Image 1 (cartoon, chains in turn purple, blue):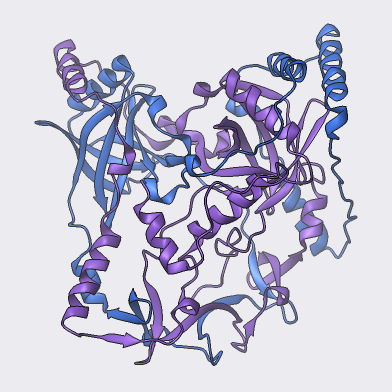
Image 2 (tube, helix red, strand yellow; image 1 turned 90 degrees about the horizontal axis):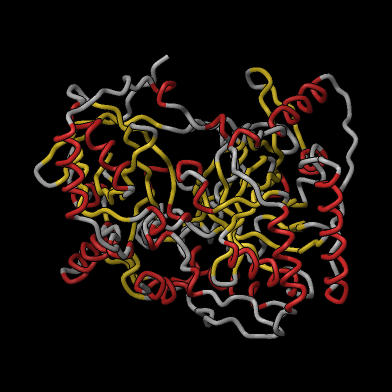
Length: 299
Length: 265
């Protein structure tokens, strides 16, 4: 197996934000924590087990030389300058390359939300107020939402610079990471042919086809049914008592990534509730397995 | 140099068929680090270990199982899982068209250009029609054993397909309660609004550059030569609740001064 490049998607479930710092708006500084707004669905509910007793497994980093399992503290980041030769860089050094941008999102430009081309969007994060008071946070969210504008800025998170659009919705601030202009190819870069003039009648036909199918869509309809198919398959086998294994402590057996979205909801609700002296709107589920069902069913 | 197509398909819109090739519209320019073992600087790799015994488990021994009840799992082997994969197809089925603002930003994942495959008559006609109607098609297709949903749109006269996250991959913002507190001060709201107005402008993507990549590479070079970088920290401050109005007023004054002096951002 090839050497591991970067840490696998982590954070969130640990309860700690992906990034914490401030948003600067004029001279106002607003402390925030940043949490992912989406999860990858690699797990699709499956667990990895070994042997006939279904022993739960953990994904761990091991040294490629002696195969010893390592803790996060035993691991450093290296840049390969020539084959098998690495320069170690520390988090502190990386932060020091852009000390301000590593801790501060400086909002100096507000643009119309619809001006940002969809192809730039990469991933969404929620910003939750940190620190004691949430007044400045609420103020910024309120006026941004009213104005329909997004704040654009660059900042550094986990050794990478991002350009982001900050958007307010339902009283919550969100950061959408965007791709840098030089990361987007042009039609020319890709080698698409030159525009061709087509018959007006042909265009009209397509316009009519579009018009006939124009309607509001609830995107929750488009659920990937693969997870459901896995569950159905498992149920069929269970009925026939095929390959069923009993486990003693199922709560511990979750493969990494499984219950992430639920934990995130819990962490976020808690963080957003901070400073206002109010309990989070959603009750945090107590059991991972039970909670996952709820998350899947919620429309 | 022309890019290589990563997939071929047919956009299906009612009876109309538009054969297309798929090209990635994004390239990743970020710097990638390797994770190393601190003591011997050997690269680390991932290994599954038995959670109880901490013994490594060989990849061949690992099986996938679905938790069916609290205390039982059903083992599913690879053949069984392959059998229920979505059926392979070349169709990119477009059944509905929506206004661009109906698509939540958080669903956008990755953009692909569609290029015409062989005939381009239908291709450019569809692109033009989408542009005129200002609509985006909701597309569904299966690529490499995976169900996809995407937004089919026109991009400068070409067709573009943006992969969307499925709704259950994204946290429902409505299920989160917004931060609550005492009612906001009208005067402060008005000042904050003015400040946004004063800082408003046009979005030009190429005004934002990744300056950090270069700095990371310089740091690496410097360290390779055995030089030690200086580490400084930035400590952000927090605006106190009581002084929010004064700070806003000072911010507005600051912005006004810059404008008056003709200085932009």
